[in-house]
Length: 191
Length: 92
Image (cartoon, rainbow over all chains, first blue to last red; front, side, top):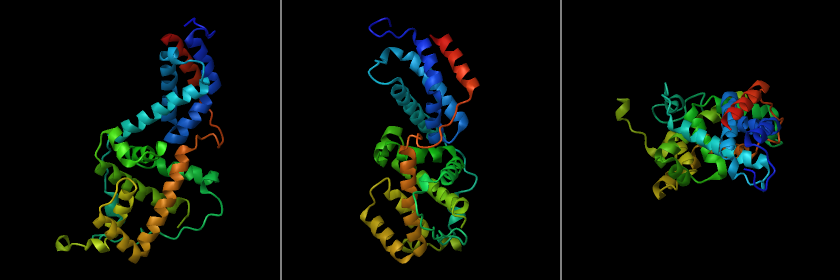
């Protein structure tokens, strides 16, 4: 630990990092998980892992970058775990949206969304609505959505990594998309 | 009776939307692809679903790639920061 770097004891250095970087890490975790409690847990786990792995920190990357990399792994682990913990759905969303003839039910038919004049994501109101809609998904559906778009991996890669069958994954993703679409249409576009 | 009445998959909105989302993960078979393309060509509601599904994909893509730094930074609870520091001291 005493080598060339003049960093004192790891715990002390990292305690200082808690003051410097935890808001940043927390913002990132909250942004991705949409849950305050989960974000707090992930930040705490990140610092604990950082203390343990302090020897591996070479000082050639910024502490912030290093911590963010650890946090990102923690976030991915979190989604993997919640993906694997299926929730019992009380009623199937497919039956709520489609009738017995497999047509859209009245009131579920997608409505025309108004053309946005600027990117929806630049709109703070939309951002927070999106968060609410994501949060309203069952945890493993939310996880499927996140896993699909983290690192923009392709489907088969994700499934391989998760050790799940492709079928299960896209079916969950499909349900999540149906619900998310409806939630945004109803709460944001007010249609 | 209703159960014996099978919907022709060509006219099933349920099937078509399923295939649209499946396509974003897996390659469709030729049959699936034709089925989906045909249905979307004749069904306005599913055409809309297709379009909105892409919009949502793009939103989620940039949402998840944005580090969250572009927005108002969030502040973590100060008590929790202290708690983490305490934990770290015990863990050294």
